[in-house]
Structure formats: C-alpha cells, structure tokens
Length: 237
Image (tube, rainbow, N blue to C red; front, side):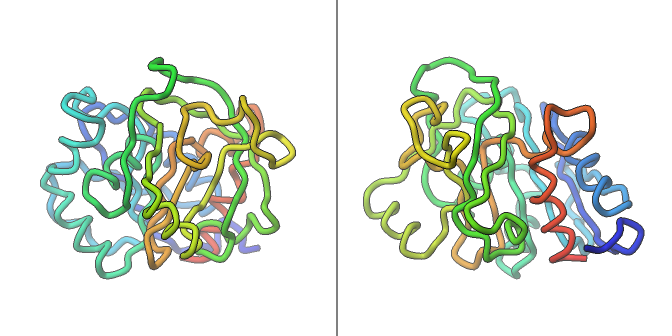
C-alpha cells in the first residue's frame, strides 16, 4: 500500500445547504491520502479537475419535495453530470446517493423506510463486487460494519431493473448479518433484495446509503470502512 505522503489525489466534496457529513468525509480521505479534500459550494460552476467527486450525506434543502431532488438541480450538478459522462469517479453517500438517483446517474428510487421512521444505527454490509476502483480492497465478499442514518433509504428497483443490476454485477453492497448472510433484522429499511449500494454501468459511480466514512478513525466504533477509502485512494492516486 502507498503511504499517505505518496498519494497525489484530488478529492472535491460538494456542499449544499443542509449538508452535514462533508467534514467526516474529508477526514476519511485525508486520513488515507495525507491531503485535504476541496469543498465546493453548490452554486459553483467550475469543478476544476478532480480525481473523485463526492456528494456527502445530510439534509440538502431540508429534504423538502424529495430527498436530493432540489440539490439535483443546483448549478454545480450540471458539471457533475458532465464529468460523470466523461468517466470521472463519483461517490454519493446517503443524501448523495439520493442526488445520484434524482439526476438519473443511477437507476431506481429511494423511498421512505419500511418503518416510516428515521433510522440511526450500525449495520453490516457485504461487498458484492470487488472488481471496481471503489471496492478493490473488499474482495471475497468482505463484511464491514458502518452506521446508517436516514429516513428515506428504502432502495426500490422493479424486477426488470433488479435483473439488470444483477446481470451486470452492479450491486455494490447488501445489508447482512455479521456472517455476511441476509436475515430478518439485517435490512434496516426494506430495500429491494437487501441492496445498500449500486454502481452505474461503467462502475465509475458508486451510490450507497450507509456511511463508511464514520468507520475509519480511531475514535469510531471500528475502522472497517477504511478499506473502502484506501482502495479508492490506491486506484485514483
């Protein structure tokens, strides 16, 4: 593995009104790269030339209308969509995942949790595809334990869409128990086929509801999310 001082990687984190996970995300990347990510306000239109664009969690625009729906039309998102089409790697977590759904950069929908209540707890995730820039250090169906904190994380895909995701190996993570198996209590929100995260067709975009950035530092409950960030840094540095 590279040491942090060796990694030359530019990460740009987009900040919207109501975003609240940008600093956690920045600390996770600084921890593995030794470099501070750049914060970009949603009204900016010039992104520069980042290796990775991050859409972090929070409650953009107070989650009015639909979660991520208003943020998807912020000025900077035209450039994000343009960069996505050119293959720039994009990571969207929680509210960021909702934005990727709303911009149609990722398929499906994110509905209210099956309990109709906000969920804040830790959950296990099994990596379903480690052959990507995002998940390269999570081979062998590795299980990580990270927080979830959302009210609208119930990922929905119809039968046709689910078949396509599975056939193209685009399911990134599934909710599971500590042994990597599905169970009646492991899926916190009722998502289709226990899906916790997905890729686009080219595997250049990852959207996920759980928050791996909060399982990377010494003061966190564990550091099982670290492999995700180290893998991204090694792939893009």
